[in-house]
Length: 141
Ligand code: 6IA
Image 1 (cartoon, rainbow, N blue to C red):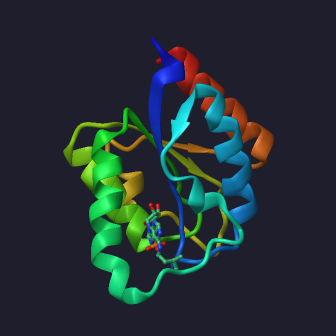
Image 2 (image 1 turned 135 degrees about the vertical axis):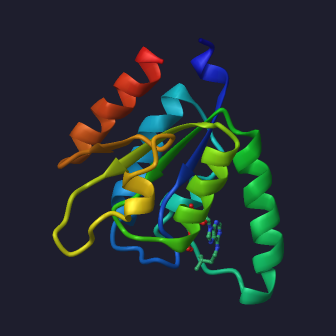
Image 3 (image 1 turned 90 degrees about the vertical axis):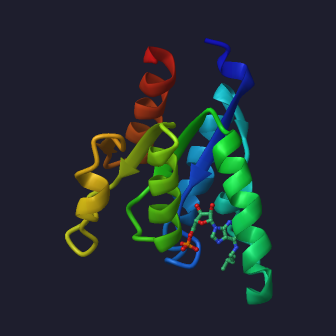
């Protein structure tokens, strides 16, 4: 497969909480060897909130990117309505999806993600483990 030409949509929490942004940043950096990451801002610790009145255009632009992507990689450990919505749209469009989840007793993954056969979830404990899961996903598919 022409992995270098892949369009990758990386999804992770923004308004859901930015505690894991350093992880997102590292995962995005790693993903770039497999293609173009359409959503690099998700891993930018300095990303500044656009004003709420831009939400409509933000939704439109993100959805266009999501539907044009070849693969969606979502970091789902911090619960995010936006990520859940994106994953639902991805599943409806039969996209290839990888969900990465770092288990935490205080943030149990939604059953609507964990229980969806079109949204495979792989658990990881360290960023190195998550990178390896990404490598397997892109080399074995
Ligand atoms: O509900 P959330 O905000 O946690 O949703 C995060 C997901 O929705 C990410 O995967 C993004 O693709 C998308 N998303 C949500 N908000 C934004 C955004 N600005 N900019 C780009 N993508 C977004 C919203 C303002 C924010 C900086 C506070």
